Image (cartoon, rainbow, N blue to C red):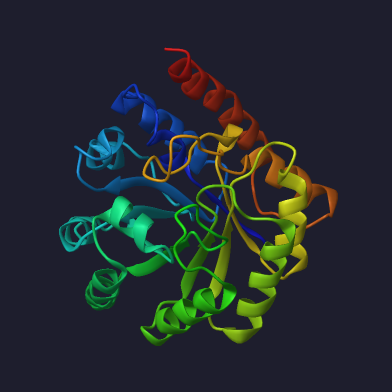
Length: 287
């Protein structure tokens, strides 16, 4: 079964104007009707660093979860954020960005990679005790612009250490659009059979012309979990000034429909969400 992770948090976090809480909640409630496997809906990080996400708790209180099977994911960057997220029974995943790049790790979480490993061990213990699941983004998995060491062997080493900590969800994250069909194929073909107990996701960034070739590379290499954002908005504001957007979810679905992959989403609800995304994001982008 193909799993799709919708990432409105990633799409919203870099916008310069604050999206009102009620607008966020209305949009997320429509996304919940689609039937995505997971919704990356918010984050518990410093409001000085990511002001767009300062209302995550308020947004969560407005979500109509009902009997919906979509799992909620919140990003955290330190123990305090993890402890806050653990206090909400509605949240299933706690997501932490671990980077192969030392430079980016410091920029993104103000921690070294060594400090992040210690924090991940603490977080994993907290999640086990609190009935949550830790989801790790292996950022800069396909290269970085900082001249930090990078190769597939490092990614494999990181995945091994994460597996040894008991972490079963790892997202191979592009972050800046440096992935290519070739390195996507190589990394997924290496890691998926090497760690069969781990569910790997593709969190890729791309220009519109690159989307289908990157999707095809990840799918053919065995990936069955894909992360995107409607309309292709988003990207980590800590990475660099010129960002390449997220993979547009509508194009992910187009590719999967073309190859007749089995999807468990409500197409009517998805179309309504796509139209609502146009109003939310283009209105904000034009301000």
